[in-house]
Image 1 (cartoon, rainbow, N blue to C red):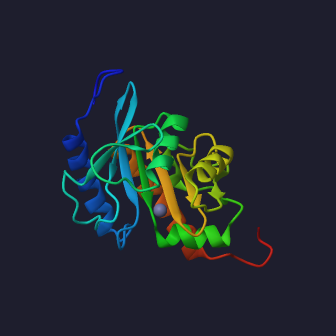
Image 2: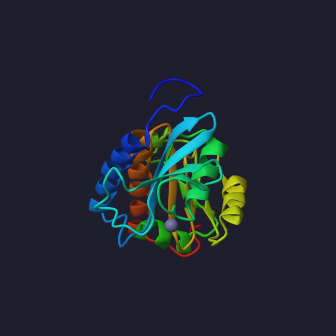
Image 3: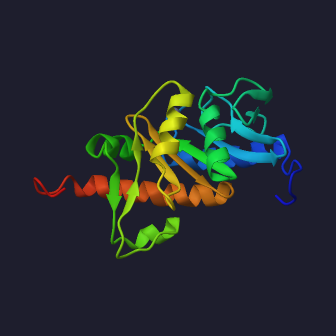
Length: 210
Ligand SMILES: [Zn+2]
C-alpha cells in the first residue's frame, strides 16, 4: 500500500484482506448472522473503497465477496454494497482513515443503553492501545443515535467525534472504528471492544456515581 493519488490496492487483493479480517472478527462472535461490514481504501484520486458485500456470512467470505464504492458509498464495481458503505466513505472523508471496521457487538449495544450520552474511560492501561494516555485524563467514546439514513448518521458522527478517539458507538446498533490500514483498525477495534466489555462487566456502580 504505497503511492499517492493512484490506486494502491486492486479489488481482489482488498477482498482477500477483508475476508481474512472478517473471518477473524466472526470468530470472536462480533459479526453474527450477516451483520457488520469492513472496508479498506483502494485509492484516493478519486476516492475508492472496497467494502464487504452485503448479506453474506462474514466467516465465509472469499476475495470475490467485495464491492468497490466511490466516496459517497455508491457501487462502482461488484455487487450490491450495504447501505452502510456510505457511512464508511463518510468516515474516510472525515478522518483520512485507510480502513473502517463496523461490528454489532453485544458490549457496544449494551453500553450504548447504559451511557447514551457517551462512555467515559479513564485510568486504564489499555487506553494506550488507541493512542490515548493511560492515566490522568478522561477519554470519551461518543454514542450517537441510530438512523437508517446514512446522511443523518454521518452528520451525527461528525458532530460527536472526539479528537484522538478513533471510534464511535451507534446506539442500539454497534461500533465504528477506523485506522490507517486494516491491521491498525483491527487492533483499535479489539482495544475499544475490550474497554466496552470491561465497562459492561463493572456494571453501573453505586447509585449516583455518575
Ligand atoms: Zn450495522
